[in-house]
Every structure is written in structure tokens, then in C-alpha cells.
Image 1: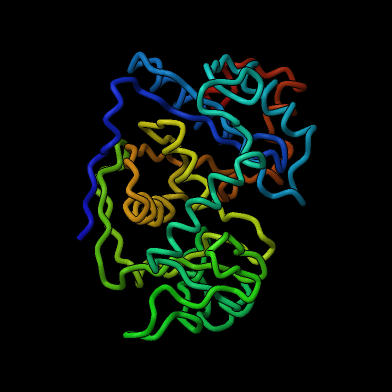
Image 2: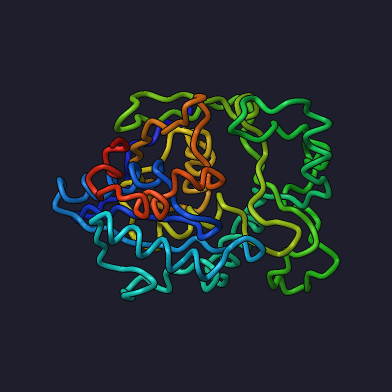
Length: 298
């Protein structure tokens, strides 16, 4: 059973804001990021801003500028970020590829990841419906290495004998320890328990389009930037279990976690960037004050 307590021993609290510029930030983002800023202030700590712009097809420069402006308008301040620099930069994920390649290569050499030819559609059809609406299906294991085989797996045809990184052209999945409990104490929601292989399966760390996946990039960056506590929405609880496995595999310190309640619309659906009427930018135009947006009500 994996039961990590926060192991980042930094004496300075370091929280982070990590939005993705794929749309305008909404009321739910405002609430979560404000909680992150408040927790940092309460602990006499620092806030680091990271632009998670790996999705080149969806990320837009105008959204980067909007999120910087909107968060400043809310009264949130940070000490390091893409707009002000800092010792742990660069603070844009699109400029951190070398860090992710190094982690991918380490996982490959440890035999903890394997190449996978399955598409998202293949996995969905094979596994049926996702476990819940906010999560991906459990991978059925079609490409998983057979027990007793070479756990370090065949490299793609493009890989050089020297072991130079060449993850492109295939998805690469992290092989979870089936049946093992991953537990952690959330600083807001309390004790959490998930079973690898049941609640979540082998997950992608590098995409076939040669882009590092969210789980790997976040772990590498949180460690490199010395993040001691992650504040984010409760829809990412299973991502936390996956990321704990990656932290351990890479020998990195695990931060603490504080998962916030989700903000939902009048129909009970959690807010997404398609809710333009509830974007911070729109609410500002409608005359809402920063205090009203932070509270999530008029």
C-alpha cells in the first residue's frame, strides 16, 4: 500500500497557479486560484505561476494574456512566472520539453512505461463507459507487456541504440501496480483511497503526437519548481493517485494536496471553459467586483 505523507521538506510554502490557455478562466477557476493564494498567504508562503500550454492546437496567446490580467484583477499575486521570471523557469510548459524527455527516458529505462498503439476510441470501446464522467476508462491492457517478459519493452523503430529519447509515433503508458492501494490525506477532503487497476488503469505519459501528457508534465514541473502544496478541483483526485505513482517512480518529493469543491451551474454541471457567460472576463464586463467573483456570487 502506498500511503505518502507530503515529503517535500522545503521550509517555505510554495503553492502554484497552473492554468491552461485554452479558453477564458471562469468562476470555478477564480474560486480555486483564490483559495490557493489565501493558503499561501496563511502559511507565509509563495505563489508560482505556470502556464500549462502544451496543447498547441487549443492554446492561444490571447488566452495567456487574459488569464494573467484576470488573475491580477482578482487580487492574486505571484513571485515567479512567465511574466516575471524566476530561478525555476522557464514557466511555460511549451519551453520545458527537455525536462519531460529526461523523465520519460528514466521511466523507460526503469521498465515502468511501455509503448501503446491503442487510440482513445479503442480504449473507450474496449472498456465500455468511463468509471465516472470526469475520468478516463480503465485501460484494458491490450499493449501491456506479458508477465515475465522484458519489462523495459521494445523501443519504437525510431529510437537509436544509444537510448536517445524518441517517444514519438506511439502512446507511452505507465504500468500501474494492479491491486495496490494508493492513499493520501487530502488537506480539505480528508483520507482518500484508490486501488490501481480498478479505480484507474495504465495511463499515458507521452502522446503519439510527440507531446508529453498532463500527468508527467505536472509531476516534473511541480518537483522542479519546489511546489509543497497543490490546490485544485476535486475532479482531479484520481489524477493525484496517478501522480503519486509517478513521483515515487522518479524519486521525487510528493507535495501536499488540497482539492476544492467544484463550482457548478444551475443544472448542477461543473463549470468548463465553454461556460463563457460565467467567465471572469464576462463577469467583469457585467460589472461584478473582484470580491463578488472571488465569492462566486453577486
